[in-house]
Image (tube, rainbow, N blue to C red; front, side):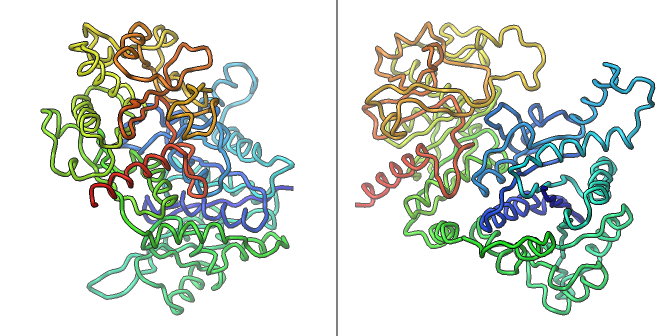
Length: 537
C-alpha cells in the first residue's frame, strides 16, 4: 500500500516547494524507496503551454508530450526518474475533465458540486500514481495556503488523510521566517498564521520546513513547535544554500527529515546512500576553474524562462569540474548587428528556444559572430532555425532568407511551418511535443558525442527546416547530422570546419541530470573549456 506525502506552502510564493519536494524524493530514493512525484497547480489554465514565461517560467515537456510546470524539471533532475502527463495537473484540467464527464452524462441526475465531484477528481489523480510498485507518492500543492483557488486541493488532501489513515499520509508544510534587520531577529508570526490557516482547513502538519536567511536557533524551534503543534525535532531549518540547489537534499538529510518520514510511516530502511550525490555537489562547490557561456535569449532578464537550460549547463560544467558562469545577453540589444564586449569575452555561445519575432535578428548576429570567429556554438530549437537562416544568408548566398514564422513574405523560406501544423486551430497542446526518435549521420560530430546512431529527444515546436533548401544548404557545407527516421525532418545540423558548431531542433536540456549530464552539454562545455585554455595560453 502506497504512502502519501503532501507538501504545502505558506506566507509567500516562490519558497522553493518544488526543490524541497524533489529533495524529499531524492532522500527517499537514497533510502531504497520507490517513489512517484506529482505537481498540482491551482491556476485555471489547462496547462502552462500558452502562458508567457514572464507568468510561469519555462514550460517543461515530458516524454509523453505533456506541457507542464517547471517543477517537474526539478523532480526529474533530483530523482533521476521520468515524469509523465500523470505527474502534473491544474485546476483547469480538473474542471475541464469534470465538465466533460457531466456533458457525457456520467453524473446523470446529479448536481455537480465542488465537493464531492471536484475533490473526487483531484483524489483520483493522486491515487492514480499509487501503483503496486510505488512505496511513496510525493505531491506538491502549488500556490499558498489561503488562496481561494487552492482550497479544493487542500480539501482533497484532507480527505485523503481521513480515508487512508494518518499512518499512511504525511503533511509537510513549508513556510518562511522573515528576518527583520531593524530588530535583528527572525519573526515566527507569519508562519504561525500560515499553519493556523492550514489547521482551519483540517490539516495539521507533521513536519514544518522553515526557509530562512539566518539560523533558527533552539528557542525559535521550540516556539514554532508550541504554536504550530509540530514536534520540535520535526521543525526543519532550510537555510538559503550558498552554492547550488543540489545542496538542499544534504541539508534536509543532516536534520533527519528522511528519518522523520520513515518513522511516521513505520518503515524500516537502511541508511541513506548519498555518496554519488555528495560527490556531484563537491564538484559543483569546489570547481577547478570557470567557463563563461553567453546565452543570447529573448528573456535574458528572467532566469526561470531558461531554468532547465541553465541547470544543464551547470551539469556539463560539473562533468569537467568547472563552474559555469552564465552571461545573460538580451538578443534585442544586438539587433543592430553590433556585438557587445561581453559576448566577445565568453568561451561559448548558446542560443535557446523561443517563439516570435522579438530578438530574432540579434540571435542571428550572435550566431554569425560565433561561426566566423570559431567560438563554440550550441543552438536549441529556435537556435537551430536561426543558425540555418544565418548560414543560408551569409554562406549559402540566399539573401533575405528567413522563417515564415517571422517573415511570411521572405524570398527564401529556409524555415517553414510543418505540414501537419498547417490546419491546426487550437494553440494549446498542439505543437510537435514529447519524445521523438532521431537518426544520426554516421561519422558526424553528433554521432561521436552520443556514442550512438539512434537517439530519442523531447520536442516543442511548430516550424522546421524547409526540405526544399536542404540540398543548397548541404552544398554550401552545412551537415544535416540528425534526421527523423523517415528522413523528412531535420533534427540536427553542424559545421565540420568549425571547432564546435552544433544546433538541434529538440530540447536536450530537458533530459540532463546532475548525476547524468546530457552528452551535448558535456561536450559543449568541453569545447568551451578547450577554447578558454587555448586563448589563455
